[in-house]
Amino acid sequence: MTVNSPIRSPLRSPLYSPSVGKWGGASPLALFARAATQRIDIVGIGDSNQVLSGFGWDDGIQYAMSRYFPMYATGLISQNENNGSGSGLGYLYNRAGALIGATSGAPAGLDKYLNRGLGGLFPARYTYVADGSSVGSNTTIGLVLAANCPLDNGGPLECDLHWGSFDSGAGTFRPFARLGQSPFTTLAVAASPISTNTGAIAMQRTTLSMAANPARSSQPVEFKPTRTGTDGITGPYFSTFMRVSNPVRTTGYCYHTLEYRGGESARTMAYDLQQATDDTLSYYFAEVRRLQGASKCVIIMVNSGLNDRLEALTSVGPAAVADGDSPEAFVDNCTAITQRIQAIWTLNAWSQDELHFVFMVSHPVSDPDDAELISYRSAIAAYAATLDQGYTIDLADKISSAQMLANGWYASGGVDKSHMTLAGYEGMGLLAVTT
Image (cartoon, rainbow, N blue to C red; front, top):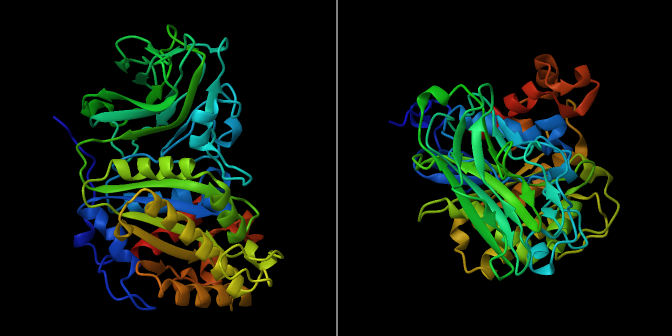
């Protein structure tokens, strides 16, 4: 019998009462509250605050959502995230190990599915093990659910491994799952090694499933493309993403980080999306949508502002504003982000009705707040109101800089007000999605 972790219903919480938004249109809270009745996916795009020190908004938003809704799946995680060094993506789950194989050099027919073009889309990287190379069976690798992960480690679990097939070679791998602590019990394993030579270069997906076991809820679980001690990886081998889901959870949220660009502005984020291939973004968003039901909801959350104050280059949206740090340029770069993602929806004939944009200018750094951040908040609110499904979260309207300092939410004891502590991101995450 499946036992899910108890989750408070937002419909019983006074924090949740969807209403008319401050700037007109539906409040973004209503979007998050959809997780009570359907599966929704949130996709984060941001600066260093997106995944600072292994947490950031990637942690904070998931922490907050997990207080009110079930997590139905992990985000899309790449083995060679940040070139094998990791970035800390995931809330009580993460990729494991160092660099496996290479992050370039794959055949063009596979490379195109995770290709940054001239931009720097970060942190996802593919894994390519060339023909004649191999990865040992005892290599640390895969996706790990930490003990008490809100996905519910004791429930039925399905791990999707996205890999590329070849038209030659004798490549193999063997999906495997085990308990992540002694006695490292085998939980699931593919019946035999899978050949990567199908006679055609194409993307494939293999799902490894395991039955529920409530005793496993407080124990870590590891998913790997290798069977420890027995079957490693033989090249040629190519993979993009891993993802674990709980198939009995028909409602809840899933959070992904698409773009994490420390020290960069919304201009860089927009440029990276413009330069990434259509195949890369189409494949990514197809997988973001795939596990949802007939009624789909994809929320793009854009967090920027602090670095935009230093932007000197002309914006990359349709207005091409020369004054790079102006509110007009900020809006134009956010417009470029919006239009690039909308274009991917159009290219794939997906309904624009399922696509939503939430803009969140950086947290306050002073009282009164920085004048440029204030101007960005006002300008982006006006822009969001022009979109059919555009929303804003005004963090400065929810908390002052003095309150953040008193809470101990700024990094380095308040010396670094551009970043936050783990408690800061989680506290601000609650403010962002519940008030």
